[in-house]
Length: 354
Image (cartoon, rainbow, N blue to C red; front, side, top):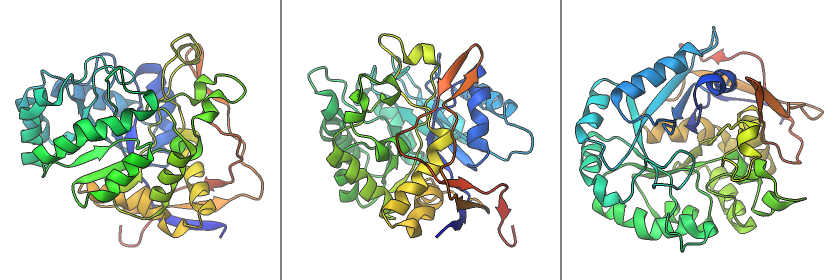
């Protein structure tokens, strides 16, 4: 198969940042994706309805002319978030989800949640209003090995949380382990998981191949080969609990390549090509549309996009820029050693009757 047409995809986990980086990276998403869940971990975070409105306005101001793209906005949960803020955001039609970062777990998470019991009143309101909780699922216990943080979080935090709030929709973001995949498969309702391109492609060895490579460093960190294969199996299965979330997280080179470099990779220019290639390698192209375009929308209670994209396979590898300019610096594009062959045919096709 050298060409296929699918419903226009969505990205259910995206970092757009702000300022110069926002202006530089947004076109790569808007060119292909209809909607995206936009993460709120700015400096300072998106904590209030007013923060959310201003950030959404800045995103739309950077949207290239002629592009139709809808940012789905999130609030950053803190120990002090009032339940009234959640109600207000939902009443104004602005809120797609609320993001829970365990304090200190990842980039700009220092204002995050110190203990889930401290946000129970907010979670009660979210359950009542059917607002999804997006979770960075890693333990912050310093005694937990970095490669076991997801498993520890599931056992100590996520499973008790689900028992306390059985009707709360929860997304285990960027699932990275066999344990995480197995847990999601074991739950029949109200739990989904996003899957990133990079966790489908690399394992922890890639971080150290040829020396320490900061451009393979993300959080949650890539894990064992057995974990990567489990994630691939889940992604290509067509199971509605698993859906695409790029976790594209751009950082300037100066921030990636310093001591204590930032966690996150900017994969958006190669994300779609990588995903299609994975599904082709796993002989699962029939499930591609479900993963990219249907499962996430269904979980969030939204209709699929009305338009479609056509993907074509080139005879030779597609050239990819190594980095994009951002002000006086650059953001490196995430790439593995594998060549990519799939690309989006120019233009979006509207379905009949749309």
